[in-house]
Image (cartoon, rainbow, N blue to C red; front, side):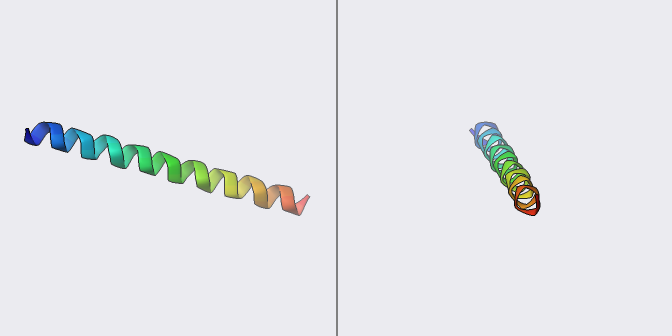
Length: 36
């Protein structure tokens, strides 16, 4: 039971961090686009 919970938390944090990374990248892209 504990392992399953841990696994879910790990996958959740990985997904959220990936989503944050994508947001950061898209923000960078929009900034670059605004510059040009």
